[in-house]
Image (cartoon, rainbow, N blue to C red; front, side, top):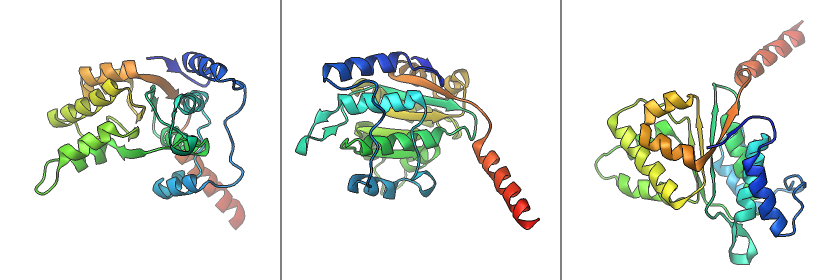
Length: 238
């Protein structure tokens, strides 16, 4: 697993440059911007939580991952590329540093680039709640679907209450996606040592190999925005 901050992104960029150069594409070109909303993007935005419908993947490592996945896609109906095998991202940072913003921005960027995208998003807490055994529900089927989904987002890994059952579910899901080399976007508030203690050594080991690590730091953006709103309200009232 490689570590990335806001500096040049090394391994991801090098792999991407090789892919794009082999296809005769300009490696220095910025991500494609869409002048008019695409129907696919509009449909995707209906599934994206309202707070993140304008999200942008502006971190260099996340933007490079988007380019790599888009460039490596296999052509499908109409020639549009679809997600194939690829690297995953593990985005770490304290609360409010923009981790969820980046992953939904990545989804928007892939669709805007014309990638045929079937994706699912869940938080770790919702994942365990949805898969917990109960009468009339086939949790194993849902686990298989999550395991096979071309792109999966797991937000806030490590935030849910730990148990041997959650450790087993996490291991099974991560292991299947690791074996099939399916791109996965994972966010966590925990450092690697704490995450390993929470999800177990086996799952943490696979995450370490299958992901590029992106560290987001800085102040809590939510609190900063709240403080700015209070300042503006006070200035308006004065």
